[in-house]
Image (tube, rainbow, N blue to C red):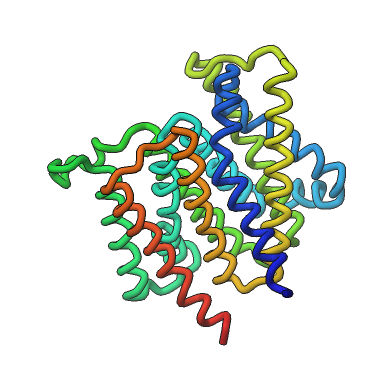
Length: 296
């Protein structure tokens, strides 16, 4: 079947990101802070890409419009990897998937897209989900911000930066696909590396540990998984309608929920389930109309 391989490729990418919390936590347990882990993993991937795509690397350096994309993608990875390493995995992934709600506002601001009534409905549904996920039972709505932990803020910020990344990808659609991919991995290394160096200099993060075979193999495996996952995303997204791609990628929530529950890295209660269902519903409402247009 012509659609099977692209769907499987997208599912593999979603699986990689949904289960990335495990190797990131293993690296953290070995003494490698999430910022250093992200910088190291993305440096390895970037090294391979520069060797494979030297012309695209030179073009990236000469294209300032791609630098903002690199910064947004880098901040996305910093926030998500840091949050999923230290926080409740399911809670982090759900808050990260507020991305469709942020996209409504960013597309209006940066692309001039009209905010439709359905877009406002998606925004309200997503925010209702956040209230259920974050706010303790019986707490007043005014205390919503105080209910957010540091990892919650990182997850929300990561989702915002991910939405900005997607909007910038639409804005830079004329740029070659290889250069956009290279920009995103370069941003991951540069932003995480700068953040790791600054955090270590300020005493907020420990320096990286001495090289050891155990954690180096984990980092190498994660780098390979991220590279193959991105290739899967490129392969699948190029062969399926945009709405179908977005729908399949929502499986990351399922992979993260099941793997973290089995690994004891998440606490799943009724409020989290209901709030998560509303957040996923908001994402589905963003995807399904687009999928219908693609089908026509």
